[in-house]
Amino acid sequence: MAKILITNGSVISTTGVTPMDVFIDGETITALFMPGTVSPSLQTDRTIDANGKYVIPGGIDVHTHMELPFGGTFASDTFETGSRAAAWGGVTTIVDMAVQRYGENVHEGLAEWHRKADGNCAIDYAFHQIIGGVDDESLKAMRYLTEHEGVSSFKLFMAYPGVFYSDDGQILKAMQTAADCGAVIMMHAENGIAIDVLVAQALARGDTDPKYHSYTRPSPLEAEATHRAIVLSHVAGNAPLYIVHMSAGDALEEVAAARHHGRNVFAETCPQYLWLTLEETLGKPGFEGAKWVCSTPVRSATRDPDHIGYMGHGHQADLWRGLRMNELAIVSTDHCPFCMKDQKELGLGDFSKIPNGIGGVEHRMELVYQGVVKGELTLERWVETCCTTPARMFGMYPRKGIVAPGADADIVIWDPNRQTKIGINDKHHMNMDHSAWEGWVIDGKVDTVLSRGTIVIENDQYVGRKGHGRYIKRGLSQYLV
Ligand code: DUC
Ligand code: ZN
Ligand code: ZN
Image 1 (cartoon, rainbow, N blue to C red):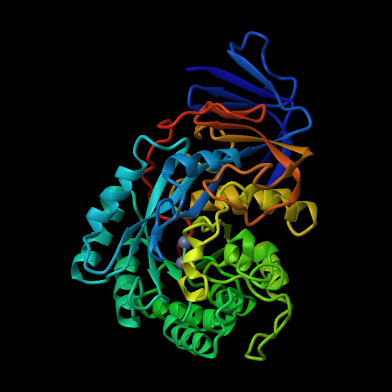
Image 2: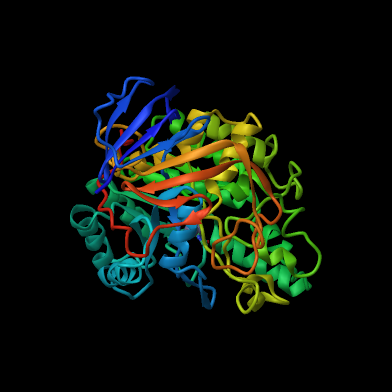
């Protein structure tokens, strides 16, 4: 395989921005050189000039749903289309959620996900396992997957009664198992029982538009569920707990308090919660708001629209602060794309039937970088929340998540002097008929992407191939106390 030298760039790590040349031998980074110190006798097949550009570890999106069966349809990206779109966005590893529903076998659920992904991915991939039915068999399987299959994290749902929902007793049992074997419980923290009551009441009133999706999932119900999950993980013996898709300032307060008490509690947020508001998205006239129906929901820009509890500074300001303060460890996308036609349209006249999800795997690196441009985050924290912590949190470090000798040569060359225009007729490679980010112009651009030493994006072209991506068997999280 090729020997590649990336010269004149600035390597960004969690601790600094350092001018350095990066040498890749085959699939692996084998050396970093101070500028001007590369020996003329070093044999290379190719030199890439990264002058004026950043050299960062490939992005890792730890929350995607390719082909997820949900809401009477399937998420519209396959592993082929979704992993290719990820590459376009500077992502070199995704961790997708394999599914087990109530009454199904966990091992079969995982095998099905392997079948979907195997031979189809442009970049490397790993799996979490959704446990939709906690019982003795699935608890045993959790331990087996952690110890033998490289699947060391399990998603549970406090929402969606009758679909993926687990009650508190089931959650406690799964957490006890996780505490025992070192696995991470990923929690969809919303009080689904209360939400279903609010949804039924809204529909009975004739409030059927997409915006009622958010109004019927008020932030105190995210905060309450987050608190309950934290208490259960404590009682279970400090079970590792990772709250997914956090959208609310009041939920974040619960995580911050738990972390202050030294608990194994972590959280992620997603670009839609950092940038979008209910008023500008779900609140659009007619059915257009359906594009932004996802759970947890995009929230109101105002402090306390319903006078029911939340008294923070505004959810977005709280989330950005949480990212700076490490109350939020990671930005993922919860990539769960559905087209408007035939998919989101299932909820015409009834918001509760709109499939929940936004496609975003292609845009996370861009959208979080925009936080750097706006002064919300440092360059180092951008890399930490999008590349390094995901690898450490989910047992892939130091193979992934760092530009250092010995690591896989998963590298993004990022051009801070160009712009990215997102939109169906601009940059858009996900298998969707719309973009949640239509018309957004980002300062900065993915220039070149390497996946294990193979160039997959360069000169605004996809030059990778289906089947290049390999399954990554993960170990345990590095963050447990
Ligand atoms: N939760 C997710 O994590 N993804 C899609 C839908 C949902 O509710
Ligand atoms: Zn969820
Ligand atoms: Zn999800």
